[in-house]
Amino acid sequence: TDFEDVYRPQIHFSPQKNWINDPNGMVYLDGEYHLFYQYNPLGTVWGNMSWGHAISKDLLKWEQQAVKLYPDELGAIFSGSAVIDKNNTAGFGENAMVAIYTSSGQKQTQSIAYSTDKGRTFTKYSENPVIENPGMADFRDPKVFWHEATNKWVMSLSTHHTITFYGSANLIDWEYLSEFRYYDGGPYGIWECPDLFPLEFNGEKKWVLLVSTTNAPNGGTATQYFVGSFDGLSFKADPAPYPLWLDYGRDNYAGVTWSNIPDTDGRAIFIGWMSNWNYANQTPTSGFRGAMTLPRSLSLVQHSDNYLLLGSEVVSEIESIASDWNSVFTGTIVNESKTVEMGITAPPAYELEIEFSDVQDTNPVLELSNVHGDIVKIELDLLNGQLYFDRRNSGHVSFNFAHFPGRFSSPVHSGLDKIKLNVFVDQSSVEVFINEGLSCQTNLVFPKEIYDQMNIVSDNGSLDVNIGVRVFNSIW
Ligand code: FRU
Image (cartoon, rainbow, N blue to C red; front, side):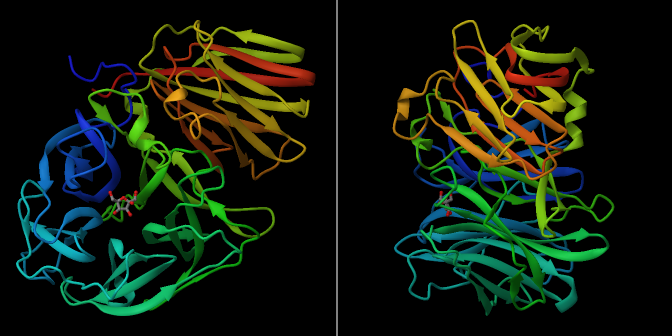
């Protein structure tokens, strides 16, 4: 059947065929999560940008729909968002689903399209574009939400090295509100795919601004975030000691949150594109190219130095495809490389939960490998509070030897006496969450077979380890 090809993710969304990049227009309506995405209907490399579409009831099992927006005389259909217009502010109908996207032709402008049949078909607004280009090469990726306090729609738009905010009463007539810039000494990346949304922390309403950018800490493209305040006019970032990243791995880009999540749920649900512009067009899959990260719930957590971090955890819906936990090892590892039997053969995908305690070793390592010698190393450097992900020998890496192989660092961000890792392994990805998602790394890998062997290495000391494994059913 379909979805059994080599490297085909078994618990992540990927298109049945052809190319995808950014998630677009994510919106919830009447029990359905809509996921639109940058899609090339004609091939497996970037081009002919259109909005593909899939629908899920649980954020995991997706049904692919017909392509919803094709290029037109204003240009290709670039990234954007979707909202539910409850009060019919635009005049397309009560509860119309309105998509706001970039028309990318001679110049980039913002356009809208609407659906009155729950996202099954869309009509482009006859007087597009709704925002003309003021003379900028980079002017794209509108993300819109309803700002209750000032009774208007607010759009975040990427404008080269800044984010510009616009406001509107009706999704059609937009006015400039303000511009957010943040210079940390450079090098300045191009800013793309912004998302501004509220999150509660200790009963206080904070605002988070996601910005995807081309100067990622580990190379290529990744998503930075700012925590601060928004008064309906401008966003102000709270001070942070250094740039903060939603994900320190190489393969989580252009992600944003779902709109119209019911108040009774209240989560900020995020999904990102699991690739990196450095090599996205060359990854060694055939028939399709590109996948999304696991859906994650975002929340604010206080760092011991008194600033707020954005934590990510896989959504609880994952339980519905998971087996029970199997405890595979509890014990002390002293000056050895300990092979731990995972008790799994050729699983579609699985999760490891590893707790290190009483750590008397500054550099414990978790190795995941297969019989072919493909190996991923997840190394802790407890003196410097870092976790490294090494995919240099992870399998197929030569499709882009300059950019794909590497060893990537991420801050552990918390007390080092006790460390918990949740590691999600699929056919061509590994997602590591550190201490309940205080920091994470998402990385593509292309092993000859899924890693099914594990070693815990403690070369210069000892640690107590507790390891659980659970397998997932395929979502297809
Ligand atoms: C981000 C991005 C967006 C743009 C889209 C084009 O990955 O470059 O800025 O809208 O991809 O496909």
